[in-house]
Image 1 (tube, one colour):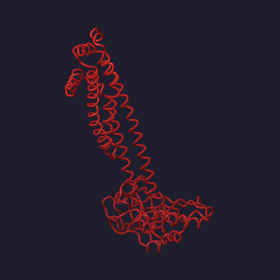
Image 2 (cartoon, rainbow, N blue to C red):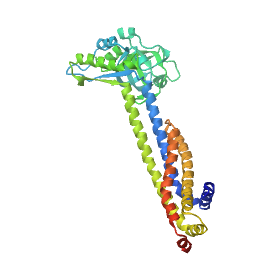
Image 3 (cartoon, rainbow, N blue to C red):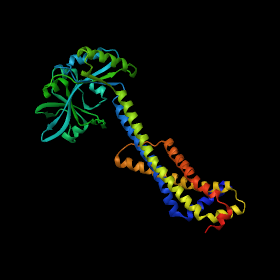
Image 4 (cartoon, helix red, strand yellow):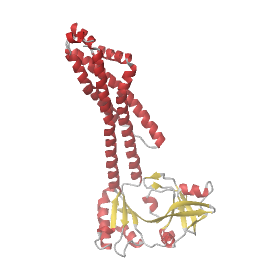
Length: 390
């Protein structure tokens, strides 16, 4: 049997039963759409989280101090001694608290961060106006502050903040700079904050000591050695009690996030693929009906010389054409719906050509698998029995 002729006959059969064909293809369309849209959104989420983590730098370590006994923090001098470790480029101890900041009659609830000059390099902050903190600010407990871009707008609107004075817990702080916007991250907004000298923060919060430190390595290759050296130093400080501290590697966080999101994307794709099997059952059902309706036609074709193989190929082609059209429509709807969801949910999407081709190919395989039973049933009909069928 000529393949081209078989495709023409299949298209003629689909056109003559438009509504039935559309309803039959619906399962395939939904299945392909689900696979493409969900995987695109999942990979988009992976990309977004990965970029946020990488934005902090893969050569970044975070040291958290839980403490032991009466020693629950480190002092500034102890922390800055980490700078002497080989490979360490920047050290930024931090002390933060959420509080209300006021300027005149305007107030804002923000995170007030006490730190040192290295914090700008470690967290990749840039100054839009004014200056960042200096060592002199820490040495003399200067009451100076830098504002995140959102905080500056919320408190000052379009007015110039630099040089103005604001109140933090009733204490006056002079604004010396405004930061360039960094946007949101997995931990929240990076622009709703106020940065002040660490020594001023200790007095403001009435709390001495440091429990969080950012350590930036000069190169990624030196990370493991720095982690080992940090843990050795901390072990000496806390007398071997490893529960007193934690050293987190940013690259480990990135690897974990990537692993979780990849597994999630795979799970979403697997769940969506189930609908392709449901669509395949619909294809098999409608093809069995088609065989019953065209039993006499099959008998006539066999009576004039059609072989069993010809009948089998004819019905398989019909099933594949039906599924192929559904797959093409599914690809179009999947790309369109993922783009729409991305716009509505304000999420990134990543379309993978491999995933699109896999979804389409899988739909064709489903068509062949579920179309074979009806096609084989038609091919096995005896001419005399088929001609007698009413």
